Amino acid sequence: MGRAKKRLKHFKRRVKIKGGKRPKKGEAVSALVKKYWVQRYELFSKYDEGIKMDEEGWFSVTPEAIAARQAQRCSGGVVIDGFTGVGGNAIQFASMCHHVIAIDIDPKRVALALENATVYGVEDYIDFVVGDFFQLAQTLKGDKVFLSPPWGGPSYTKEENFTLDLLKPCDGYKLFQVAQTISPNIIMFLPKNIELHQVEELSWLSSPPLDMEIEEHLFNGKSKAVTAYFGDVAFCQ
Ligand code: ADP
Image 1 (tube, rainbow, N blue to C red):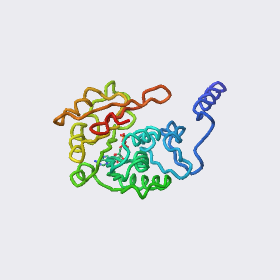
Image 2: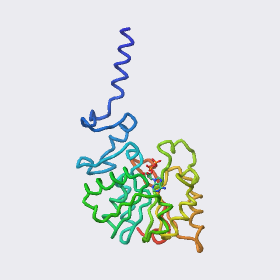
Image 3: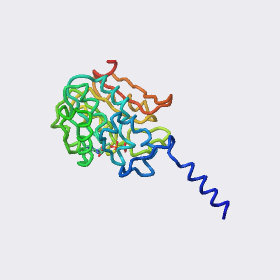
Image 4: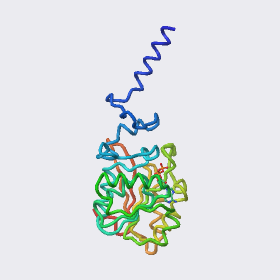
């Protein structure tokens, strides 16, 4: 009995969050997202100023440094953010571009994105739209299209090679074709284990083929994700 108790104590000690910091009282963070919560300032540097997240947002928002890099490479013009989530990318595009149209099918996530944009003081540069990107595409006009479609949650890492057909709600080829009806200047944020030759194939869907550049994002020396830039946004450091 005494031994069992000791073991339990040991286990409890091990699950403590590194650094001893815990979410504030009233800040809902499930066991699953604690791992992401410790990285909160990497997701949003202004996290303490009123950033709002939902469970999915924790593991799907683009880390701020990556979002800022993508926006810096695509400065100016109107950007369509097709799957805005809790707004990490839209906020960064809004600080570098003339205007952003941020779309998400989930009204709760659009509401969170608006609140988060307000924290960064860029809400006036973003039109938030609740809707299905695939249905809205034909009505949209913009200079660049940013695509960060669902990767299927954290389990994407289990695939040795993440193929374009695993993107949700439809495969990456269809997604790319729909985006091209708006603009050939497309930025796609993709898992680190994406099948790169398939991404290359996307550029051949256009005639003549689009310029394409792949950028790998490293975090603490490890690959975190990749961004594919097509059209005028390729090779424009
Ligand atoms: P995952 O964690 O699987 O990568 P995300 O949370 O990144 O998923 O998904 C990105 C966002 O895309 C979500 O906020 C989701 O509501 C939104 N979304 C899904 N389907 C559509 C769609 N057809 N049109 C617009 N937004 C969509």
